[in-house]
Image (cartoon, rainbow, N blue to C red):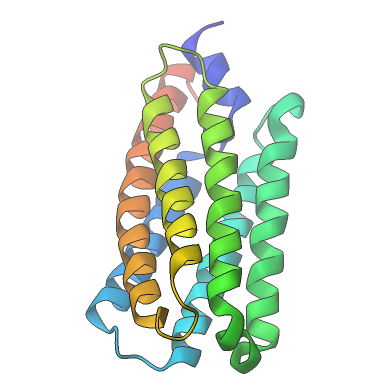
Length: 188
């Protein structure tokens, strides 16, 4: 199995622009949260809902290019992100109270999906490490949020989400360049 075939079987089979847009969106949200940590909790809730919704949409778009055997992982990740985003938008005030649990669950789930997708790449694929790193970032931050007290931890939660947005966005943009390189080699 060559490198191109391995990338097509994982979430990197999506168009590079999908990964780049998701990464840019993550960077913007991450910087907004870090530079504006005193924002109202409802505004933070809207940002997190938008991030989960857009991430889910990008995962579904990426699933269109994935091979049938690996498509289910991207579809499931996309559906989970869209569901979390829609729930957050439908009840922003009530969701603010339970935001920590929604964010924690979404980070843990998407982290696991990205780790699994990374390990499904062939051994010599250079993007494997970035995808696994992105997954571990989400997973670790999700688990750290479990340890925070719900009310007192909201400021810390905002900072952790901001840092995840920045570092996760950087890894997604790097992955988009790798996917673009592979698409160029394929003549796509």
